[in-house]
Length: 344
Image (cartoon, rainbow, N blue to C red; front, top):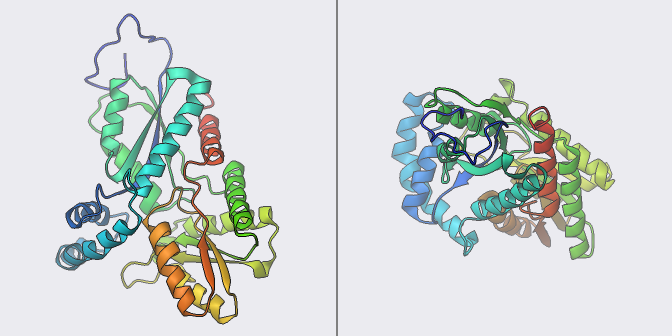
């Protein structure tokens, strides 16, 4: 009998002797369209999550509905339009392509015993839809891989919350495993280093390498979030793979929101400092993003480039995300296979 309630009984042609495993890949999410109301719906869901904004609801909700949601979607939708692809939002497009490659790799090893679904914490396709799909397939073991290399409560933690909410409706729960992070995984580090080398090869030269991670409030780290420690570990490992000296790279955090203190140094401050030091050519990598998105394609590649040029720099280029690269898919498939030991 499947582990989920309200699933059709197995037919004679179905193999009920072996467990069926569901692998859930989860990314942050994206608006369905680069329009004001679509962005507003997405931001409402995203910024209502207590893990994302842990300020008292009495303070935050009036600000959210009175200031943020009426005005922020105007600028955000405009920025999305700069990077929107024919197939949709880059984050959604690359996540789907990556999921398809990982699914193919898993299928080659496990056949149809392992089923993979892609979901978004906010927006579509939802975690609840993916869990329902698993239920219809008789999945009785569930492995969840958030597409966040470094653990953060406001990202990975929200995936755990969303998965558990979706499972609440089922009487008999699947045996579940969550992959908290893969910040120091050898395959992931190799893929990052290789991507940076390819970028430099295409440019014809190496330049100062800036590691720009998505920021989080300092208070989250003070409460025990391991994100800062893990980002620093990722940087050190990639630097070692590339054989860089201490003067050839920098580490910083982007995408601040609100007035609280976030992890420092801030990316814009670091870019300005590097320009003032006489560095004219800058390479930026964003290892906290599994695939390219608004924060990489618009914030780094466009906004930060323009600011660097204003401050005296000559060229700022973005190392493309790992996206659906074969090496990325292989690294994540290997992580999944390792976590399935004892289940297959």
